[in-house]
Length: 188
Image (cartoon, rainbow, N blue to C red; front, side, top):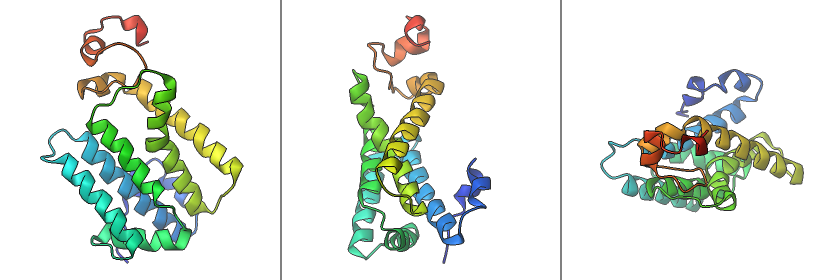
């Protein structure tokens, strides 16, 4: 089986050592899917990111229909079957990436939670699916950890995101005001 090894490039690589090989492979596959979707949304020089996200969404449909078309789709199909990964673990992430492409703004924290769920919480839930951890406590863990990690990323990357025309913080500042340091007290 042709397995993506992108987890070796992540900070999670050492933790994978303690998992069963099948779990390591499935996590690496899911990470490859997430990395691909994120790259589509974040790399400014992509010629047609909308079409790429649409094609990735179609591949998810093919996976769940049992007829994946790509190498990644083939391994993800096996993972979906082995670990009963719900389709939403893929499609909701793609909704979050679509919001990035659209440079969606969030006026309130409640609106931002919609985004946090799609780009971080859902990843935690898929991870727990693969690890075989289920139940309300697992869902609560994925929610709190996913939100915390993504909020940390948002705060850390506020200026980089502004350069891409994205503002995730629930505020009235524009990307230009953030980059210019206007009203910096609202960013800090």
